[in-house]
Amino acid sequence: MLNKLYDWVDERLDITPIWRDIADHEVPEHVNPAHHFSAFVYCFGGLTFFITVIQILSGMFLTMYYVPDIENAWQSVYYLQNEVAFGEIVRGMHHWGASLVVVMIFLHTLRVFFTGSYKKPRELNWVVGVLLFGVILGLSFTGYLLPWDMKALFATKVGIEIAASVPLVGGMIKTLLAGDATILGAQTLTRFFAIHVFFLPAALLGLLAAHFIMIRRQGISGPL
Amino acid sequence: MSNNRVSRRQFLGYTLTGVGGFMAAGMLMPMVRFAVDPVLQQKDGGDFVLTDQRAEDITEEPVRVDFSFEQTDAWYVSEVTNSAWVYKEGDKLIALSPVCKHLGCTVNWAGDPEQPTQFFCPCHAGRYEKNGQNIAGTPPLGPLDEYEVQEQDGYVAIGAVRLNTLV
Image (tube, rainbow over all chains, first blue to last red; front, side):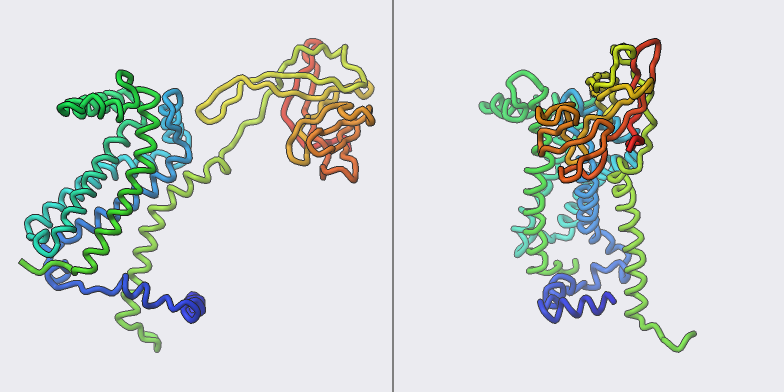
């Protein structure tokens, strides 16, 4: 049944070469944990991506209930966690996944560093990877504020004060982030929400595409 | 062993599809259940809401009776005012919902000067008889809903909405 459907589409659109290009690639022995168990360190990049997918999915579902408004944000989070079926699970996935993705991206960075995989010709991919790390940290920072509880508020206050300590332009950065020169409030929350769900994910997807196209172009780096 | 030998490639295909499907389902099941929750949530039936309309003042002519109650909309609790068209048939109180069965606008008694004994919806000129029966040839496809209604201490009290039992 599925085969027939596939053949029907393939006959018309010739889709086999498309997914072959994506799926078929060399997995050298030195990165295959079936050959050398220590090669599991090569899985961290894929695991980072896997958790990122979970973050995107669970985040999409959370926005069905969440409102980025200072009156209702906390109430809506409380409601979706305690009154909606599986709310605790879905929010839990996003909450714990957020920490895990930072851990994984860090381990992936360590692996790339200690295997020397960043060296020529892969310097550009290292640069993109560092940008991705920055985007993930930005997502973590902006997402932290959204539940609008005390921890979120004061963590963001501290974060914004750190940004404000930049020489010369610190004050402007602070206003740009918070939406107001002195208040951390309504405008900060909407700003952080927009950055968290639209701007940074867009940057993330673009950079991820570049990251993956480059690794496919250049192949996996050789053994130590 | 059966006669259909499973090749290594097929076996790996089945295993990977099975494990992958299981993981994907484990990931997606909570999210989907989370998303469809409003459809499956149980809502408890409404109590009777006392209005400030004296029951003895109700005649055979429908009058609009407003009633307010506390509505819980997920995390938002607010005072909501709805209305009903109330009249007497003999001694029996009758309360009809003002929500047009065409597309949900609000109907008025005698809203159309040419039809002084009918409910009229201004949006698409839907019309109803006094008992809520929709008039053929106008947009609505069913009769107006009916409220449970009773007299409490001389005042009209309005309860849950239900399908029209008069037509």
